[in-house]
Image 1 (cartoon, rainbow over the protein chains, first blue to last red):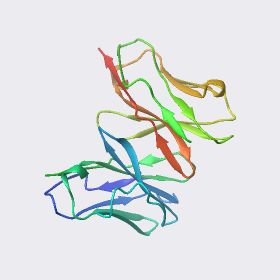
Image 2: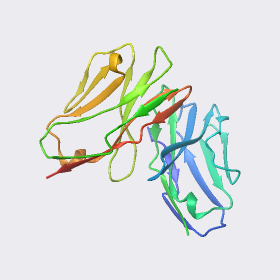
Image 3: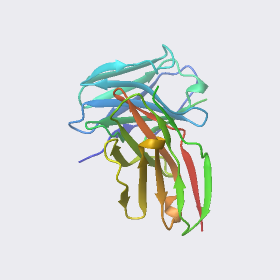
Image 4: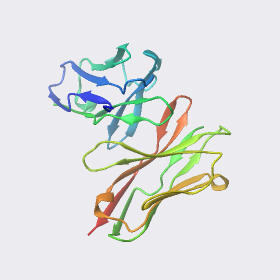
Length: 111
Length: 112
């Protein structure tokens, strides 16, 4: 089975630009999570979905962040407009039985 | 409140030494899971183990072992005969509702 697939692996953009991160969860997993990792704050949960429905977005830092899951095999995390403080590694993870399986992450650098 | 504390920020040991990574947790739940994850220098997060709170038997997997003690709310991780490839950040984690909350991690350096 393929694992969680994230794209792009690396993104460098300029402040003010829109950034879209993509995630394909493991087939059959009904939970999908977006985490952000920085040196200062560690691993932070941004939002999670159950059966494509957003359940808890309390970790989304501000309105510039949005996430969607239009179907069971695809999710996006969008930042518009991006700011330098959004620079981080963004992980997508999926789950079915409790433990999370993570993608390789998308490293975002906002200049 | 659900909380995971990994008090050791960074540990360095010489190869072949044994090393224990501490994890202390707080939970309001009577049954719960605990997890350990590994993040090697390449950056991916790798699931290592899940333990259920009603099973306090120690778990051993090769050079890795886990000591779960409900009496002290601890779920410690020991690497025996450490190797350079064990160098990574290790995270302990605990579910809160449907979410998983991670500790701050312990960065482990295995020196050749």
